[in-house]
Length: 114
Image (cartoon, rainbow, N blue to C red; front, side, top):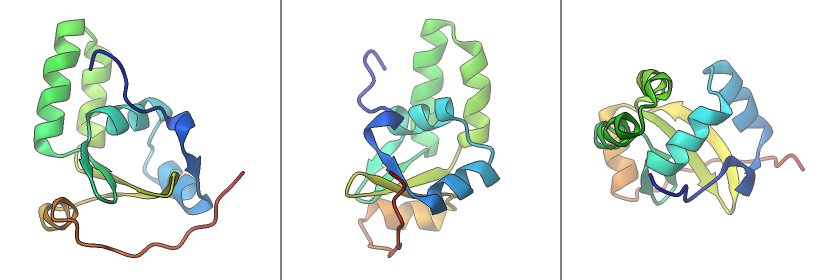
């Protein structure tokens, strides 16, 4: 990851997202990793095995061992984004990751915090 593509500051966060983020112990640095290394899918981003592998490789080159340790915590996390808002975050099993990759639409409601 030479230059970050996305920043957490580019998105609005719904109340639901903030609640789930807190429940799952996800830090802003974790979100930046998901947004920049996560596999981009129609509904957002997912930290798949391949995404984790690439992140480990890139971070090892930078000597960022502290961040590498966080990768285990964010493995399989999916961040759902709609119209510039982060709607929810959850741990996706392999079936759900497959659905996300295929672009299967899941519905989420949102209340955006300004």
